[in-house]
Length: 172
Image (cartoon, rainbow, N blue to C red):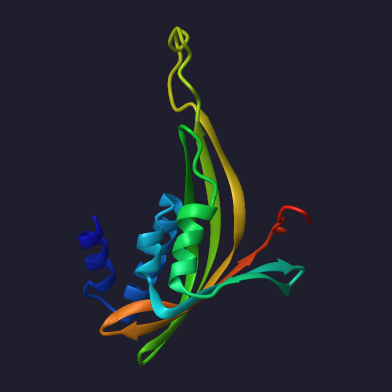
């Protein structure tokens, strides 16, 4: 799978399309809690800055200051998905600007958490059909990365995440 994901990032097409593919790989790595895949998307000095967008005012929350910290946060600090559960980040309304070997991207995002119902011990009741479970929107905001082309591959230099909802930490 790693080989295939690299082909998508470095594939042919416009720079704008390749930049958009980096964000697509970013959200998939986040949903899979795959720190190694996430780390591969960043420059050696890449960082993540997270903010709460409080009535239009950016309030800094935290910074992950290098790819190793980013990978650790994804693989070890984020809560694992529950049994029968998953997350799906969606991005839309991409605004991409490329200037030589640098690019910016501004995209809206929503994260949905899914949780499939457990099959009853005696099976589903007679007449039960369709999908069973819930889909809940849990995050929303903006992704605003700055990217650099490194040896022909677009990588994230700084990834700014602006959350529309308050981000609460233990002890606050």
